[in-house]
Length: 151
Image (cartoon, rainbow, N blue to C red):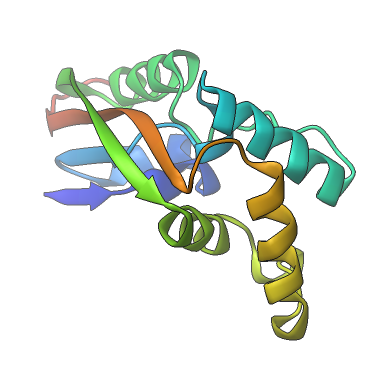
């Protein structure tokens, strides 16, 4: 069994899937800045201002990307493809939210280490609420098993 996390969107999955026997693609849900909450909209506005561009990439977590992966599995000859959803909520402290951002962006796009305290202070001021943020998570697993003899 090959297990792939949210990083699948960085791969050429149409080339990868045919060489695998069984696969589980796990996702912990949409990026923090794409939720339908006040704090997420404020986070998105802050980040778009910081980066000078609109942030729309779902990192392979939206319904269209999951359907595309499922079609790719079938095209690669997988006999069984199933999607399971696991919705839940999580409470994030400001530090956890900030840590999530540090892990979400490429190193070249992060503020320099010396600039990170100022970035964090500006972000804290931009977010509504008292430092705890309720995150609605839709985790998924897309499991494809034993390729058939297609092709």
